[in-house]
Length: 130
Image (tube, rainbow, N blue to C red; front, side, top):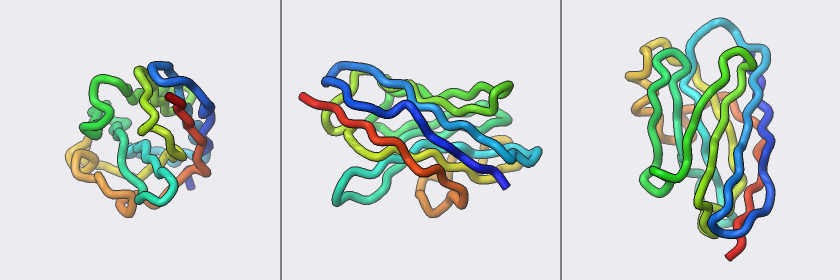
């Protein structure tokens, strides 16, 4: 069973950058839809970006397009989220998630909701001050 551990969160000023990492282990041979989600206090968890590990297709929430980049390092089985031009509204707990996807990305393109993903990391806090 895949196990996910996030890191890289912290506190930055608006306009700054952070790179989040999600280390995967116990990685049964398959292809996955990998996602970054975030949850601010009092708000529902929302999708930020997704990547299919086979096709390398990527999808982004409108609120982060052009600022965030999702990527993977296959050799180290690590998922990344590069976050640039951070805004106070990006403040949230960020979670990495995984779901088996053998469709070469067709299914991943539609996996927008958190309840589509069965495996989650523990989260890493991102705080952006104005």
